[in-house]
Length: 291
Image: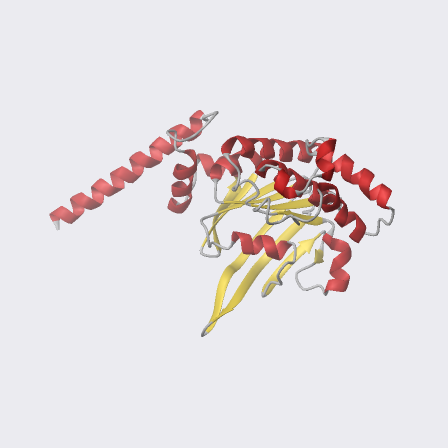
């Protein structure tokens, strides 16, 4: 079996609140293989973004382990964590708020290179130009600032910045949710191409099972800080075992609202779900009438 690039074990994250603590993440665990793609899905407030911030150590977990190639980064002091940060990078939800509006695209993408010790400004500029080209933006983009780009272009700059560190894992926190459908498709295609070219691993945070279907091979479904279902994406979408997952699936893959390709097996399964749920509702109504 392939040794996981990342293994999360019994992760707990708590926030102080008036009168006590709020447990945002409660005993979560999963693994990601090198070059693999895991999606974490659920409604707003389920804890998925808290997990994302823990993985890149923007916050420190309360309990549990986050093993990067066997090294527990959950509690490492910053001095020891710093050399490992380049291996796990994040693409944020807001493609504008996550970019410094005062810097050019070249400066934004080159900043991680400077922090990593690349002293030559010429070398940083050359590498930034390569990365801008790699994410499908023209050379003319280098000297423009974030306000001069569309949302999809800004997200491409965010991806280029994340790639500058030479990561093995990208954590994409709702990286397409602020984009319209056609631009979402373009960014997802870019992520697939980068994965194939560089053997990148992904953790994709999303509330949208339609996005998950396009990018991940494994999925974790969360509710209230806990995992309620997990497994291969194709299996979970085709035959979810939990009512909550079926609800998410109907919302994302309703045949009336889907755009583009409609997988026959999924459409059929959704219809089966709806018939099953209607049958249960009829049973409850009949039972109530006879009591």
